[in-house]
Length: 264
Image (cartoon, rainbow, N blue to C red):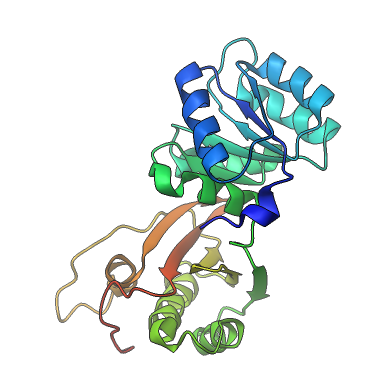
């Protein structure tokens, strides 16, 4: 649930050429306690409105007439450096997320996200809510022992009262770090975002090859990490990042999606 006291003073600009999309998004924002909302229907109007209204948050569509969102994004970032821009688009996240981040966006949310999660996803991406309590990061060497270091990192970061999900998070981060070291020949970076309702772990490596969900045989020692992600994570995904990629997962604090497996 969105913290209304935290977001009540946030001014939002919705930039989308579809009036129905703007109406739905405005209603969802109002329901979340964000009543200070202005709108724009194309990139040029978005820039003019942003400069006059000085919003805290811009929710920016990419495919718009006149100047598109991707065209106007660098100027929004340069002229309004304190305004957080979150792209909300129908384009796949894995295709566009890194491009828009390099242009100045702080986050990327796909329009297909369920309405009951959409505003929380946007505010989490913009770090404008207590959903994102803290973000921590560590860089690891390209050695097998980094899996153990990653497990200790997440155990120290996660609240002591979250033992019911700790085994899942430790197992998953261990598998992803091993994949980054062994299969991607990388020195991985691990980020963890602590939210009120979930934990998000991101593992960065230097290999652009996207992971694929497989059904490994009992004798096959490979392909296990993604299978575990699909079984144990509440949500997971992968997308390009720089010359490599990031593989991420989220684990809800309360409900367990599966029975933890033991490493091996």
